[in-house]
Amino acid sequence: MKQIEQRLPLPPFNMETALQKVQLAEDAWNSQDPERISKAYSIDTEWRNRTDFINGREEVVAFLKLKWQKELNYKLKKELWGFRENRIAVRFEYEYKDVHGQWWRAYGNENWEFDENGLMQKRYASINDLAIDQMNRKFI
Image 1 (cartoon, rainbow, N blue to C red):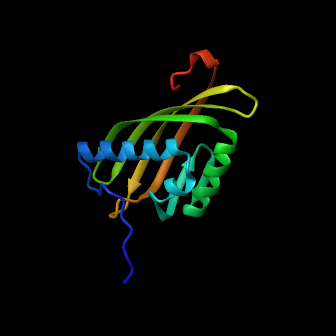
Image 2: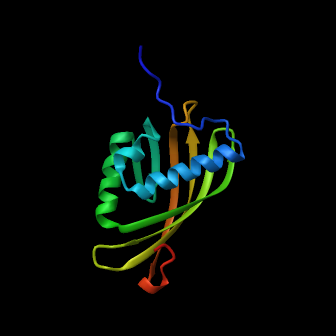
């Protein structure tokens, strides 16, 4: 018998479970472990990340590995913006240093849609980057 993959908490979300889902995502992304992160997404997940279109867990892992080769000293903070049934919206900001030593702060919004097993099946991210001086970092 095949075991069903689930990622708690499951939809429909309430305030408590939506906040939990956001914190779990923040913790996973801050681990910078592409395999760990990919397990929160459905096998056939669909992403739009800036101008990249990513389909499926394998592409998620490849995308994240490449991301953290370019975005060093990555630190992320997510905040719940809203939720309804199986959808969550978040705002976020993160900081990183590029391979040339320039620090950046990225700001954005994500819209998430989950399947009945709590796996994220859709993730749409809009992100803007701002060059910052190291002394202006928020996340140390």
